[in-house]
Image (cartoon, rainbow, N blue to C red; front, side, top):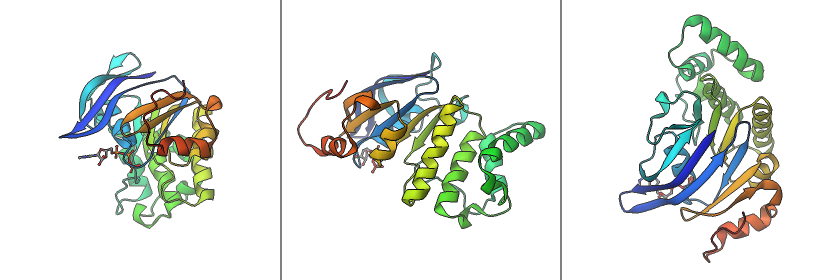
Length: 239
Ligand SMILES: Nc1ncnc2c1ncn2[C@@H]1O[C@H](COP(=O)(O)OP(=O)(O)OP(=O)(O)O)[C@@H](O)[C@H]1O
């Protein structure tokens, strides 16, 4: 469904990503792991046209979408780092934004479908996003993305700032979405959560892929953390 080929990202003289490649199939989960500054957000943002691509290619369902802006990408939605909700908008207004330009009947149908997954949001339709708890706000960011009826969902640190229990609930939701056929690319610092959900894991260090492979064949979370921290260059540690 998604293929990233030798993607490089530059911000002026900063080399944020160096020739990183990955593939993701339908209803597959790829977790991207790396320390702060490893290039995880840059990768996710470049896939949906939000970071400058210096070289390489992104294809989605066979179409070249390199540099295409998110709003023009049919089938792809993003849950951005930090959720990026407008605090003064209500839950209902936020969901409406996520749907883009659709007819009222279609909007109602999508909202009903999405709220089936998030009953707590359904009880807060008139509450302003800025007054939601961290866990509720994350669920709203997720629900907003689902209003676009994506086949591929990109998530950038969806558990940031959440309690372990709330983070586990987010990952339960992601598991349910995968069961329902969504492809997920998730940037996640919590390697226990990542390894529990992902089919495959991509490890980034200083903008380079230092390993990529099935989650089942990865070392445990503690060893993975050590690999991400290590200073020595070890190309393709895990394949
Ligand atoms: N807009 C920008 N302008 C200049 N440099 C940037 C910009 N965005 C990111 N960078 C740099 O690119 C590198 C990768 O940043 P990125 O945000 O992709 O890392 P990350 O792995 O997502 O980090 P974190 O886990 O802290 O969010 C960093 O050195 C960062 O300072």
